[in-house]
Image (cartoon, rainbow, N blue to C red; front, side, top):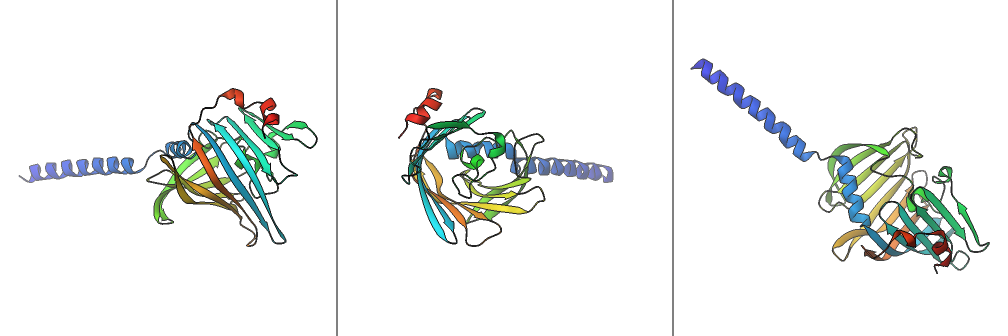
Length: 256
């Protein structure tokens, strides 16, 4: 009987270990898949949006109005509609090429990868933030650090390290993504010395059709309390009728 009891105990321990591992695997999804699903929720297959960007500095505030179109991950177009001095300025991403059109001099310029980390329109956003050259899924190594409560909801906390030879200025990026709706809630960008550079807070979640997405993105530099950039969405349409032909340099100059 002792031998039978020992065998049964061993069997239960083995089964318990297997169940524990299975349960852990069920609770630890692939972080790359989480990010891929988040981007699908936040962007859709295609998208049109109208928004306002407010740049806050100690001595002044500046507001920029813009419209944007997205198709998948490889095509985007942003058009500045106000203030008058910037009206008609456009930024185009088409696969690996990124272009800027300045209507004041009627000139189109291709932006090199070295400029993607620079400020966009004098804001706390970078060129890469608004006209993304990097890919969150393929250009980073990902690690799911934990699940924690953030702003009243459970959120995945994912650490992303840029892969070698990718044109990414950050040394590390942390993402907070809602477990239930896969909406992006927070981003922390760190430099190569692991120092926090800025934080992006995404809130004021609203419904647009069947999707619920944040309508306000606040970029807060880590080294100051009186500077920030706040991007507020007034209107978003998902899965609209767009094709790759829309994202051309000629169309970038025609849009108004």
